Amino acid sequence: MLQNRYGRLAAAVLAGSMLMGAAACGGSEDSSAKPADGGSSSAAAGGGKGAKVGLAYDIGGRGDQSFNDAAAAGLDKAKGELGLAETKELEAGNGETEAAKEERLRLLADGGYNPIIAIGFAYSGPLKKVAAEFPDTKFAIVDDADATGPNISNLMFAEHEGSFLVGAAAALKSKKDHVGFVGGVRVPLIAKFEAGFMAGAKAVKPDIKIDSKYISEPPDFGGFNDPAKGKTAAQGMFDAGADVVYHAAGGSGGGVFEAAKAAKGMAIGVDSDQAKTAAPELQSVIMTSMVKKVDVAVFDFLKSYADGAVKNGAITYDLKAGGVDYSTTGGQIDDIKTKLDEYKQKIISGEITVPDKNS
Image (tube, rainbow, N blue to C red; front, side):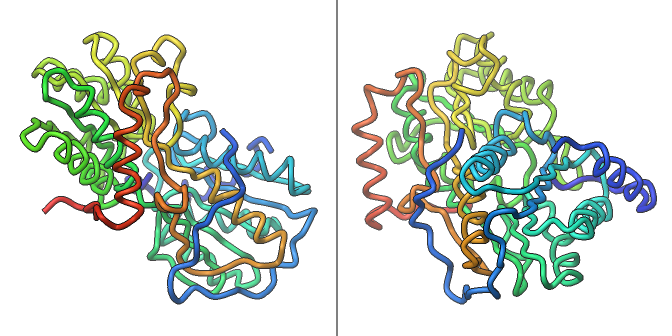
């Protein structure tokens, strides 16, 4: 995600080399997510079949088994169903500057890629700047509402709602009434995961003990790609008596799973159904995952481009729209599914309002 700073010149060279050298869980296309108030139709994209799509990943890129892979799945579905002419996928690097992100987006736009999708809030400032330079190019950004413009679509999610459900699952399955949360970096987005998880666990057991730890603090964003530190953070929780740990830590989550296996505990994945995507020897410790359907949002945006119906502004994929949910792979939560679905319906109906930050 967001990175430390180094020189703009080096960043531009890095981004350029990535562009020249880069190679080229599908979700349902039927999402009921709707534009937020104020969203309006942009000028017709005129894309249709034959569009050249550029996609700029966050750290970890395709193959991270989580956030970026979900975006990749949406792109892959679009390749198969929308007849895209060409795609270019570029990946963020550890410790890069915002200038590097600008150059990555600018090189895609200069190369004729339209539309362009930025994966992650780290692209907020760079995308807003580059989108203004290329008013005829359609841009979308996942997880950020601050980068606004007539040619920018903001693909947002109600992560706190999905996290409530896995928090309830953690409390229902915990035998020690002690669970934990590992966040990658202490930023508002990850705080939404934490707040929802805590609210869900406390809805089941008001006195449950919840440990919480962030791997890194801004401006150090390495916490999203450091499995060793993820393992250390989770191991400390298991050693202290927790028996279920949820992570919202990107690539660091693999370390959380390793700690769960060593402690004979349970873990909860994030973004993708990680009982399917994690290393085979770790999949059995993942009792559920908070599924964030980035694939659906990416595909929906590309389909709207193909249809000439791109909307600018915020489009929120919440629980009601099917944008977040919990997974059931492995059958480990089959015995509590009825209870979780009761909570889901209460959130959808408005009977339960899930906090998106801790007080």
